[in-house]
Length: 137
Picture (cartoon, rainbow, N blue to C red):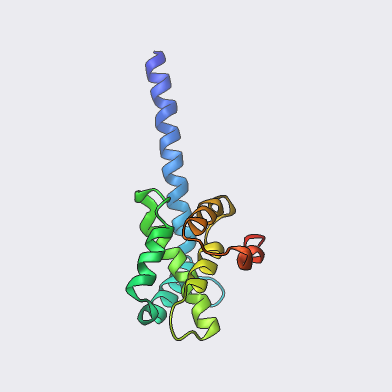
């Protein structure tokens, strides 16, 4: 009897967790006031700035998202690349720069993940003092 009870609790917990993540994806797909969803804008920014990415820039982005579990890495890269693309279009950039990639990474990731970025930038000997204002947002 206890086995059935514990199995039911475990099953309900797992179904709830899965439902939560599916619901979040559903909410991101809903159109906003402008008629486009969050994911539509993300795809737009990526497609508009795809020609700006060099192989070195892509390798740098891949290096930055290494701490993300492999299961979620593609989603994280898409979100980060979308934010980088948004910044590139706002600045009317002719090419992707390390500065844009770092700013986009900071803006697209939660604060708890910034420590991984700081560690990686220090390993690569990149000065993070110019990005202090972005970490505070």
